[in-house]
Amino acid sequence: MIQREEVDVVSGAANLGFASPEKQQARAFLRERFLRVVTGIVGKQAEFHLHENTRVSGEFRGCDVGFSEIFVRNLETPIGKVPEAILRGSDVIHLNIGDISVDQ
Image 1: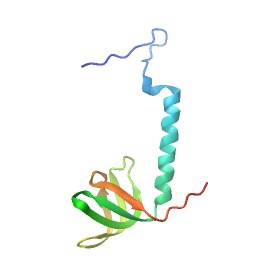
Image 2: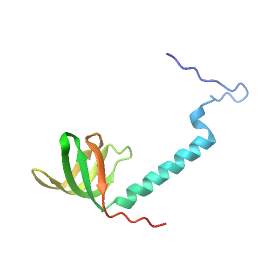
Image 3: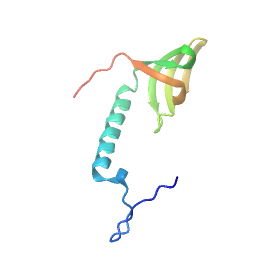
Image 4: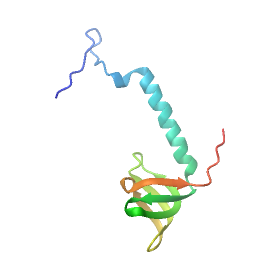
C-alpha cells in the first residue's frame, strides 16, 4: 500500500506528523537521556545475558550510535577471558550493571 503525504499548498512542505515541533522536542529529550545513561555506565562492570542462556561479563566501554555493537573490556566468557571484545547488540537480551549511582 502506498501512503500519500499531504502537502501544504502555500509552503509546498509535506505535512509529516513525525516532524512536528512537539515530537522533535520529545525525541531530543529521550535521545539526550539515553546518551547520559550510556556515558554514565562507561567503565562499569556489566553482566550480559545472551541467547542460548549464555552469560558473559566485562567492563562496559561504550557502544555505537545504533547500539548494534557494544564494546567490552576484559570480557569473561565460559571458555576464557578476552582482553577487548565487541558484542553484537542483537545477541544481547539484556545487561545488568550493579553499581549505578543516580546523581542529579
